[in-house]
Image 1 (cartoon, rainbow, N blue to C red):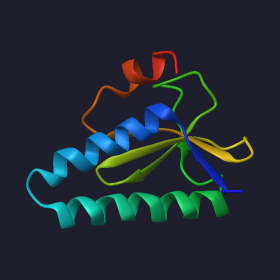
Image 2: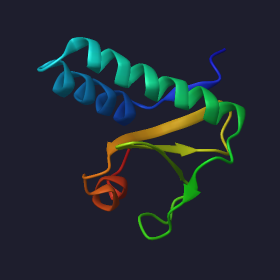
Image 3: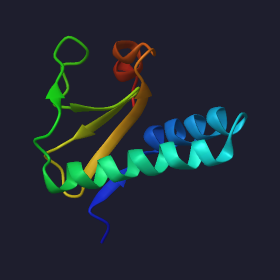
Image 4: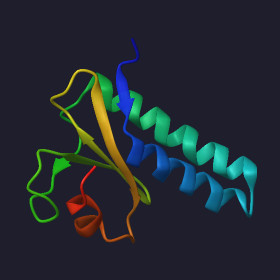
Length: 100
């Protein structure tokens, strides 16, 4: 079993990130997504990484920065759930208030 789950909203985020970056440079898009995936594997090993952000959501989610992207994950699930992957300039508070 895979040690983490990419939720549908997070999968859509990753696809949008790749599509946006690939318009200019496919290899860069691949590198950025590989970096995000590496960070997720680190988080799985140490799910306490990152920070809670009560200013953005009351949900028990942690945020881990892979500049300029925020990996938003639920650390207390088995497997660990990646809920969103958001660019730091996006309105995370509004996006996280939407139903999954």
